[in-house]
Length: 165
Image (cartoon, rainbow, N blue to C red):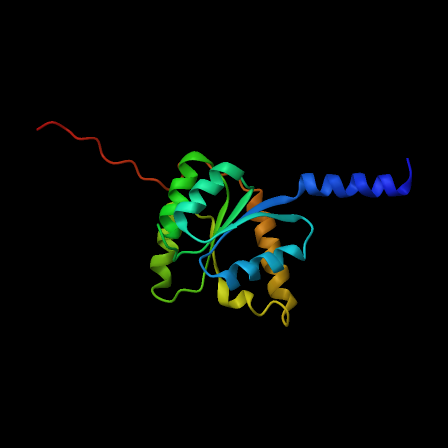
């Protein structure tokens, strides 16, 4: 086996072992930002990028990624509802990444209740070129979360059964 063949085999193994990521954000510049950051680490492979909540559910179930980044504010259905729908059918680590302002505690509660594993600040990510620690921390966090076991239907509260009166 030549060294070229070994390199090709190594590249193939990296592609097989890469963490397959689906990016969900309604803003193209935000999708591009996440793709650009993930492209700096060969352990990640972006398998799709979509811009609305309903499309996110469909594509997640088709592609079955290893990790999903999900914006909160999306057309169609919001990120919280998309997370719940995806997790009911495909247990996958989902990280919510948002720039939206408002009640942060409420967002955290809703995200975790829906089944997201973490909520990250999108605005901070725009500084990744001048502050490499932001990029490094973000990628490290995604690598860690991608290996987290997720249970089917996590976060979904079952309605109370109706009791005849």
